[in-house]
Amino acid sequence: MIRVGSMNRRLTILRTSQGEERDEYGVPISTTSEVATVWAERIPKSEDEAMSKVDIEFAISVVTFRIWFRTDLKATDGLRCEGVDYDITGIRELGFRERLEVTAEARTAPWGA
Image (cartoon, rainbow, N blue to C red; front, side, top):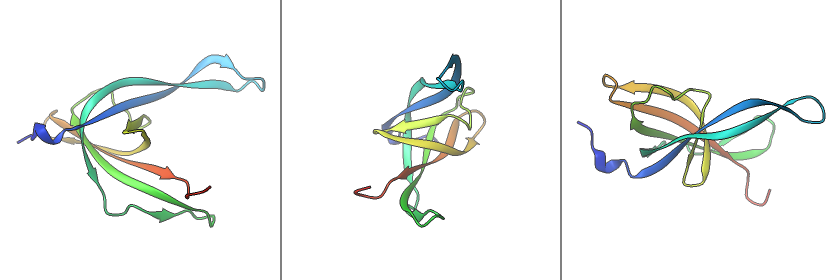
């Protein structure tokens, strides 16, 4: 059973692509575009903070989003929810083409950095 009322967040799917334009060093310039904006349910995970391995602390917010099934979502896409950008770490199909469960993480610099 799908609880539609729990899908109360707007989630933007972002995709980065490299165009034919190049910078002054000949490196292709990448652009980020919005693929779609969808309704989502946001489920926070318990492991909200971690430390990097180079002695610089940062917070990692790990969340799971549940959205309606889509065939165009890629593991290389990014997500934006409430002004925070997330990297996708996993995609799982729920039911038979009913919904997707997308695990994502956002890294935040320490306060004052």
